[in-house]
Length: 177
Image (cartoon, one colour):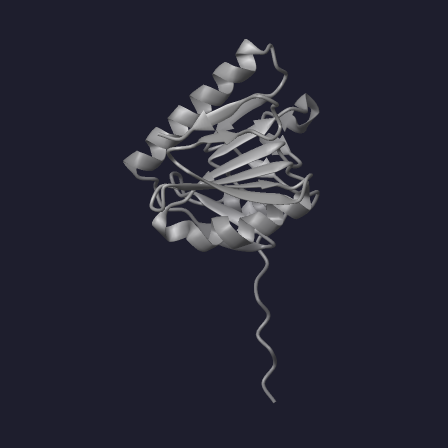
């Protein structure tokens, strides 16, 4: 009888050992390599980051906006490391020189053709179980935004032509461009 092949479990040390310029995420000990984002992805990332940061500043808010690449260590273990496209973190105690330790309050992922399943399934589950309060999946191909408000256990979809209400900020909404 053949012995079952043991799947290798990677850690954050393996992520930090990657060659310069190579980006990857680590979910439950499995490495997922990341392709460079395209121009539309980057335009959406910059626009959203700016709108959110401007809103927080106008409200004298405590939260901070961190666009990728920015390390998020979701759990206390060393087998989960992600780089959300945008992380909004309201608890300053979670922020260190290395990144965010624990779940951001709000995470936005901008879908690329190579990461659809990651954003819609794998990361959805990880963010929900880690304690993220709100998760947006911005899909440029479909021109749709899927909004998960985990605290309220709701999921809503919006088109890019609609104002998307922000759950963690009463009275704030964003139109994706």
